[in-house]
Length: 344
Image (cartoon, rainbow, N blue to C red; front, side, top):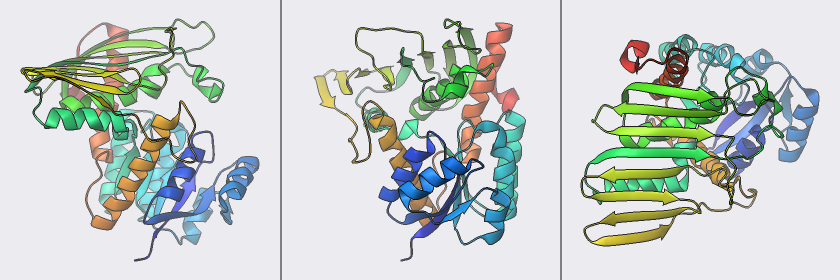
């Protein structure tokens, strides 16, 4: 069976992780790369031995010779590139955040649907080993029916040194990190009917919010809290761990710092190490995210081969992106936002 051939657009900070991931994926290889910065193009091309290099995406699509495209650029370029891929009937992976606005995201889903091509958003956090372990424990019935949860990512890690542009936008933590945590909440507890949010900017050197607390009402009747912060200094820095508390009718699940999964019910308490694998190219503390990059890209290759829809398809991710938009609206208005109205 011939491996799928892919092209990558965007050779920046995070794309290097994606290129490493593609090296490990079975059934897919990257054969072309594109970036407007000739230096980045050369660095990534030389590092991964990619001969086909482009500074213009339109020229790359015109030349063809690949089965899918992985868009790893910043958010404002996503719609044009996704629609370009759709016009060439090329299946597409798009980096998060999905789009500048929910309207743009809906248009991108519509374009790919009309072209009959798969669209997956690179929402990799739900593919982290510890997050998958929480979902598996819940699905086992060990704690009965869940009714409350907390999904927490609180850190003082300096993310701006590697991605200085994060300090410049009017939106920061909800759009960059909260989007992942909100998606985990959906992955674990299901879709959301309404939410209320509060935000704060603690770091005076950035333009956007660096703390957010979001209350979610889920369709199944459960309530959850998503709290994210890049202004929280702790004795042991937990970056980049998402910590989870999950209460059910028959017990509870706790994902604690250090990747320990604790399940408590009438039979007692079980503790399990659910630490991610340190891949050969990964480095601590990023290895949790780096492993999930490989995992979601393997999922993409497997899904293309089988013809099945990906777990973070464009259509599915609209529901996560709507939570981001709703959180900003609620923080600005201090009102509870109806998610159904945003998606209508």
